[in-house]
Image (cartoon, rainbow, N blue to C red; front, side):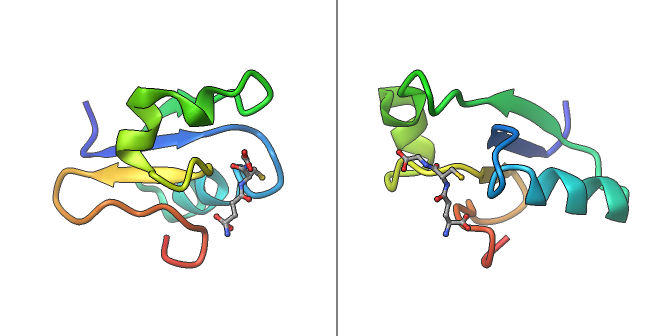
Length: 71
Ligand SMILES: N[C@@H](CCC(=O)N[C@@H](CS)C(=O)NCC(=O)O)C(=O)O
């Protein structure tokens, strides 16, 4: 298991971080959050990002990130 857990979807905002991680060569585990099904509002995901937006990252070696700019 990678220390980077990515929660996202292939939307314009959601694809930027996986592209960056791939280009930099950082390994990560990808988890789909289907915003068309409302999964961004689930209890599990709002614990990760209270703003209910993808992308979000849990880095076990650092703080959580929940915006393309902070990521
Ligand atoms: N400023 C945020 C925006 C993220 C954003 O708007 N994500 C959209 C998908 S592209 C989203 O999660 N929408 C779900 C919703 O608004 O309910 C970023 O760039 O990361």
